[in-house]
Amino acid sequence: MPSLSLDSLSPFGRLAVKLDNDFSELARISAQLQRLEIESDGSLEHAIKLLNQFAQHGQSITDGIQEFARSLQEARERSEAAAKLVAERAQLIQQRKQEQNQVQEKLTQLEEEVKAANASLAGLRKRDNGGYSDEEKLQIRAQLELLNSQLSGFIEGAQAIREEAGRLHFKGIEREAQALLTALQSSRRRLRIV
Image 1 (tube, one colour):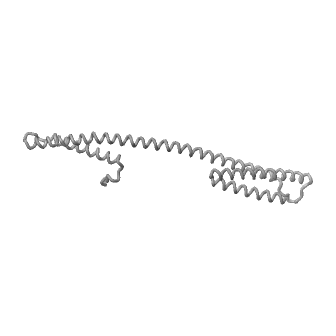
Image 2 (cartoon, rainbow, N blue to C red):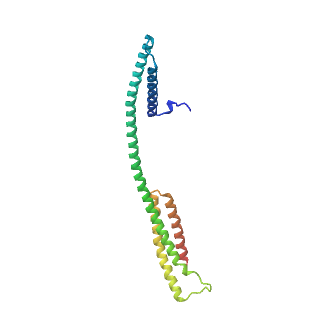
Image 3 (spheres, rainbow, N blue to C red):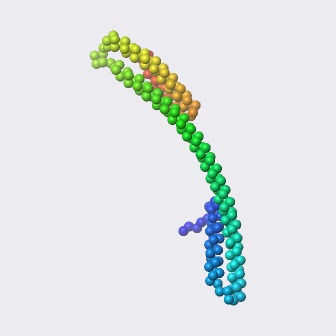
C-alpha cells in the first residue's frame, strides 16, 4: 500500500488522518496499560507516563473533533454556496436553451413552409410534348406570382431569423438561416427570369 503524503491532502483530509492516528495511538496506549504489571516502582512510573500520554491523545482527539466539525461546517457551507451558484447557472442555461429552441423552431417551420411551396410547383414541370394550353399557362403564371410573393415573405422570415440568431449568438442557426436565405434569393432571381 503506498504511503499517504499529508501535503497532497486538503486541510479536511489532514484533520481526518490526524484524528485517525490519535485514535490508533489511544487504542495502542490502552492496550499497553491493560497488559502492564504495576507491581514495581518502575512499572508504576511507566503506567503514570502512559496515563499522561493517554490524556494528551484524548485532549488531542477532543480538539481534533472540534476542528474537524468546524472544517466540516465550512465545507458544507462552501458546498451549499456552490450548489446555489450552480442552480442559478442551470436556470440561465435552461433559459438560453429555450431561446435557442425557439429560434431553431422558427427556422424549421420556415423550412417546412418553403418545402410545401416547392412541392406545389411539382405540377409545373415541362411535359414530354413541351406544350401547355392557354388555361394551363394562366394557372402557371398565377402560381408563379403566388410563389414570388411567398418568396418575399420567406426571405423576410429568413433574414429575421438570421438577425435574431446573430443577436443571440447562435452561430449554427445563423449559418443555417443564411444558407436558406441565399437559396431563397437565388430562387427568386431564377423566378424573375422565368
